[in-house]
Image (cartoon, rainbow, N blue to C red):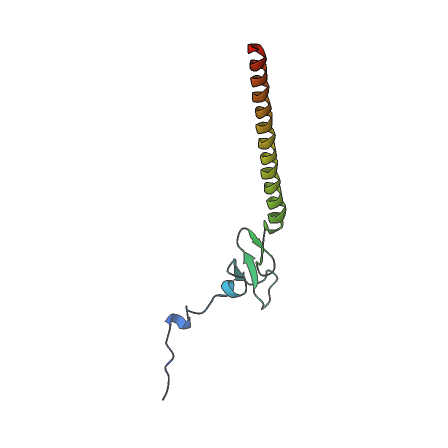
Amino acid sequence: METSIPVHARGIDYSLPTCGQTQCNSHGTCEPPEGGGTNLVCKCDLGYRGEFCENTVNGELSLPLTISVVAVIVGLLILAFIVAKLRQRQKQNRKLKAADVYC
């Protein structure tokens, strides 16, 4: 029994992954090198870099950015705590002064 191979338009099987999907991690397209040659090179999409478009441009910024955001949040929480304590003291001082006036 013989299996038949489907015939595609112009001999292209569109179900197969493209070079950009396999070699360039779906973040670029394959192009011939500028100086000529047989090996295709990746031309990365905006925001990606590396030989195979494996690195993001902002990848190096993710840890410092996260630490900065956490530091700002912690700073705001500390500031809010200090402001709340100061208001509580002011309120207590007003009550004591009001109590002294009536005595």
